[in-house]
Amino acid sequence: MLRSFLLLSAFFGFTGVALGAFAAHGLKGRLSSEYLAIFHTGVTYQLVHALAMLAVAVLSVHLPGRLVGWAGGLFTLGILLFSGSLYVLTLSGIGKLGIITPFGGLAFLGGWLCLGLAAWRLS
Image (tube, rainbow, N blue to C red):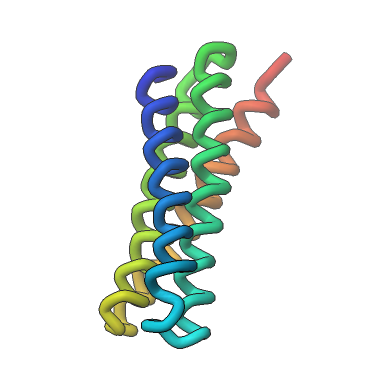
């Protein structure tokens, strides 16, 4: 689990920074300020959860059980659904893709809940 979550954390961190730079420099004149803000929200959530996955990687070595692994999996799913849907929505203009975004938010919440439960179970 350690290696997998470290690699995912690095990947999502790298692509989050790259997408943020792309938005700031490549999309500024092409998207409305509303769509730029939506894209920025996707980047922010991706970067925050890339750091959370780094914590999950470290915790996976120290906390027994499946909850930490579930947290990492849910954070990954959240990034893909939440941030991914916002990226595709803003770049394609297909507003109906916004229906996917809340499922990513629920995955994020589930990941944080799993971390909280893992902490609760510590003796």
